[in-house]
Length: 416
Image (cartoon, rainbow, N blue to C red):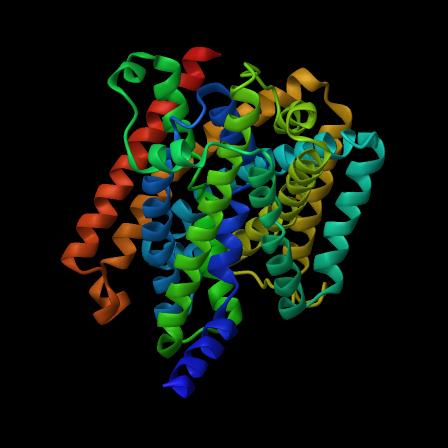
C-alpha cells in the first residue's frame, strides 16, 4: 500500500508545475485588487463566489492540460493547424495587445507594493524588469519552473495575513457556502463586483501558457492523471489564497468603514493600523511577489504562444540564436511594460489597468469556444475527447463565464 502511494506521490511531484503555476498567476496585481475591493466594500458577502470560481478554473484548465498531453502541441499550434493561419495571426496580434496591457498592470503592482517601503518606482521598476529578464535569458526550463513554483508557494503570505486580521471565522465560512440575503441583489454595484470576481478567474493567456508548459515539460498520456491532479491542486490553492484576501480586507477595512481603495497597495497601507505591522508586511510582500511573478509569466506566455502560432522556434531551453523572435518579443514586452509605468502619469496608468480587463474580456469568449471545438474532435483527441457529461459541465461553465464577462465589460464601458 505504501509503495503504491509513494509511486503516486513521486509521479505527481514529477509533473507538478504547469497547472499549479498557471492557476496561481491568476492572483496577479489585478486579481488581488479585485479581491481586496470585494472584501473592503462588501465584507464576507461575496465569499460564495469562490465556489463557482474554483469550478470554472478546474474545468477550463483541465481541458487545456488534456489537449496538451494527448496532442503534444500548444493551443496556438492547434488553432493554426485546424483553423488556418489567417485566424491564428489575428488572434496572436490581439493576444499581444491584451498581454501588453496586463504586463503594464503587473509593473503598476510592483511599483505600488515597493512604494509602501519608500522605494521609488524609478528604482524598483527597472531593477525588477532586469531581474525577470535575467531569469529567462540565463535559465533553462527546469530551473525557471522551480523558481516559479517557489513564487507560487509565497502566496501563503496572504493566508497568514488573513489569520492575523482576526476575522469572524463562523461568518466567513457560512458566507462561503450560503448565498447572501435577497436585498443585496438590488445593489447594482454588488452584482458588478460579483461578476468581476468570477470574471477575473480566467484570462485568455492562461490557457495558452498551460498547454505550452505541458508540452515543453514533455508530459505523456500515461502521466495525465498526475497532471490533472496538478491542475486541480493549483486551482484549489489559488482560490484558497483569494478567499483569505477577501477575508483579510473584510475583517479590517470593511469593519472600520474603509471601503474604497484605488489600487491593491492601498489595501496593505490601510490594513497596517488595523491589523498590525505583520499583516501589513505580509500583504505588501504578497502583492510584490504576485506582481513580479505575473510580470515574468505573462511575457513568457505571450512569446511561447505567438511563436507556436506562427511556427517559430521557442523555449527557454533554446539559445538566442535558435529562437531570436521568442527572446525579442519577451524583451520588448518587459521593456515596454516597464517604460509605460515610468513615463505615463498615474491617471493614464489606471486607465491602462481598466483597459487590460476590457481586452481580456473581449478575447476570452473566442479562446474558450475554439478550445471546446478542438477538444471535441475525435480525429484530434480520440478517446480523450470530452464525454457528454463533461461537455455539459464545460459548455455550461463556459457560457456562464462568457456571459459574466460580457456583463462586466458592459459595466466597465458604461462606467467610463
